[in-house]
Amino acid sequence: MNDDFQTFSLPLDRFDPDLLPADARTPGTESFRVAVNEALLGMFRDFRGRATVSVDDQRISVRWTSEAAAAATPLDVAITHLRNGRTAEGVQILEFLLSANPDDVNVLFNLGLALSEARRLAEAEDHLARAVELAPDFVNALVALGVAQLRQQNNETAIETLERAVVLEPDNPWANRNLGIGHLKLGEHPDKAVEHLRVAVGAQPGDQGAWLALGDALSQTGQRKSAADAYKGAIDIHPHNDLAEVARKASSQLAQESLQLASPAGIARSDAVEYCVAAIREFRGRPNEEVQQIAFEIATLGRSGLEVNNATKRYRLNSLPGEFTALHLVCLMYVGFQMVAPGTDVGFDLAKAYSQAMERVGTEN
Image (cartoon, one colour):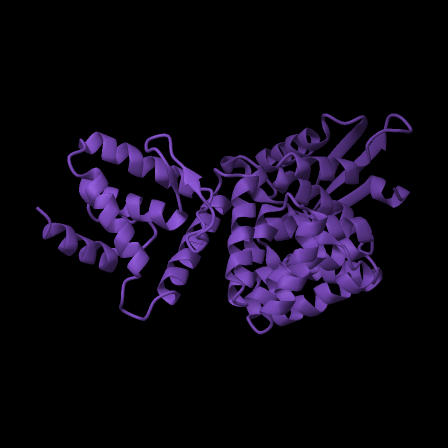
């Protein structure tokens, strides 16, 4: 760390008032001086070193003195706060550091990254652009700059920035991930989105967001089977979070569209009608509790994805004997919910098939 960083200062209006008690936010008052002193000392308290704070009518100054050769630096302190979720404290220290050395690339990068996460996007872009200007080959700064631009919907600019990062590091997962998302947002070259997102998931197989984006890109290019596999990949990583729910809805929509594409417009698929007929017959005379149990088991199974257009794959249930195709299960679930909770949205519109099945079964003795 440059020795200049050991003493730094900011104008009073650059100190984040949200770090102070509500009754101590007026510059020039004794309560303001005391609160600023306590806030800054608190930011450094857990690190090996000593901070001295002074507040006058115009500026806030901090002097940092390390107590050992291996002591944390102020930049280390800021990064630790950011990693611990104390964003406001981390940003405030970084702004002090930047005031002392406006061209420190590491400070510009970390401050820009933190501001981007805090959705202060215009400020983030300014700092990250300056970091890239000073260090054109700083790939992580290029990626962070591209992300800040994507978050502001500056998709074309973001793509140009992220392409620079990929040229420098062709296998960088974050550069490829966000470049793929940029192409996906722009909507002009979904094939390029697929290309870069495949690199991203290949390098980082546990990146749930990249798998979800890959599913969207594959869907846009008409690769429905591969898209369904990508959505399943996203679900399998963390089955119970928000991204998994988005993947489930996208997968269900994809399956629904596939069902519609598999038959003439407005006409129910004959195999779906037959499955619904079989389901109605299966559930006749069963108590509602049993029907509900079967329907819920299928719904739970479906949370990991059902390949409704794969007639070769078979599934088993605990509540019914035998093996079933995914379409058969979906029809069982749809009919079951129509019996016990009519109007339930199961993610598949089988109303026409169900109606035709009911007409057929209704004629039976």
